[in-house]
Length: 612
Image (cartoon, rainbow, N blue to C red; front, side, top):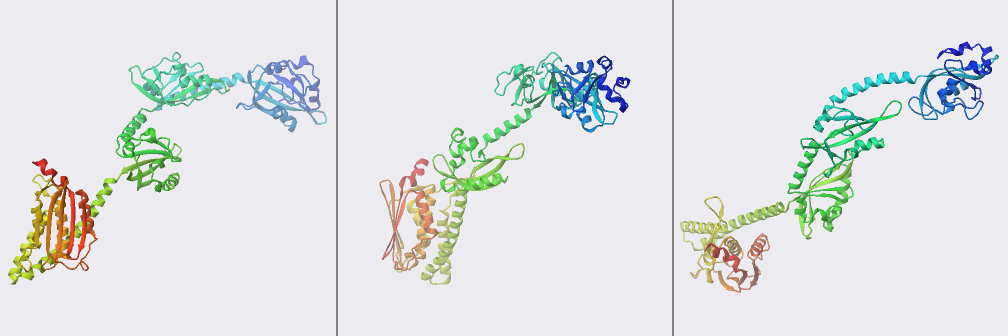
């Protein structure tokens, strides 16, 4: 047995002698300077010495099938994973017959104490060379590993401290009791103070507050919860107050720390200052709230999640009335089919730019909008919703419509001017006796036509603003009709103007000028003014706050051949009548066209009264 006393060395026995290990006296076995035990070929423990029992913390029963391969309470690998007895070094040698050298494992005693050991296991054979068992020697290496770990930990800790000092993030550590053991300069800057190591607990901030502004006791802060629960705690933001009263919002990331044996030793906390982020969010919120555009967010189910004041002004709903409801509440029924397509494009990550559509206000009225829809993504890049920017384009649509109307009016007037110029030449030629007389007459009538046309436009004032013209009803009629006032063959005037001569002002002058110009132009092209003896009688009167004007043509072509214009001219006349708050009626009699015009008297003369 001299060979058994070789501490942590290979045990080399003569094959003829190895089987006698089973019969060694206990007193001799106990003299070995290392823990040793012997198993038979079935793995049952048949011998062990006092050092083995002390290392295991128990005395296993010999030849008991309940204790096979090892006498420890439990066995673990160095990484903390459990080792079943059947996977131990002893079981491996009994299965293979090959020795195991320098196998380090952790033995756990019944009290929970864990001891790191290094195992040497040799097979035992009889004189015939048959495997009959194995002997294992255990050497306690706990102190050696602790010393090495302490040295490595010291080096690692210093390296970690050096690393933490260079980080721009605030980092600090505590022991298991919550006492601060380290913090870097960034943490001191965030706290606005330098807490004393080993005395300050849980957090170095002077005071802590929750996001709603209520005080947060240090023993309820995320670091304290991590130490108490021995688990990482991820909460929302916390606010630190410095001694000077300034407050810094931050996000804490406390995480528990364990040593190499798995023992809980404290925690580390990383504090992320979100002051700039909060400021950016405030600026963004101010931009959103001050925007004239409606800015809305919704989830992928179409449920509204936010609603800015611009949306309230545009649609008439408050945020309380809309958040949590489906966005189709803003759509006319005939537009419901738009939403599935929009959501499908959003889920694909597409952006929808300047999509012009119609939406519905709270009062039920419809509004033209330009819609821009952008996908909203989470931190992983997944689309989780959408932001919508809706802009009221009603004024733009009206401006476009006005532009189209003006272009049509311009084209209509230009065509009329050419037609009237031809009519003036034709009328003048009938009475002219010579070419010079014809030229003089045509020039005079074209000049009168220009004067009449100028009445359809407002006057530019000295300061470049637009001033309003004033005149009387009869004066306006004579001016507008003067280009056509060619005497009949009977030397009679072609126009007769009778009745009330009211003062006109402002927009009514332009409106009446447009109407009379249209009436006269049509009469010159198709009606009584297109013949040599045709006449027009105009009678003006008042009744029940209405101004009545009757335009009666005689002597023109038969009504069967006269044009009954329903082109842009009629559209222009009807739109002008609406502005004057009136109505118009036409009657094609055999002797000629009769137009009955009635307008609101107050709209025609109201401004004249104010100016006076």
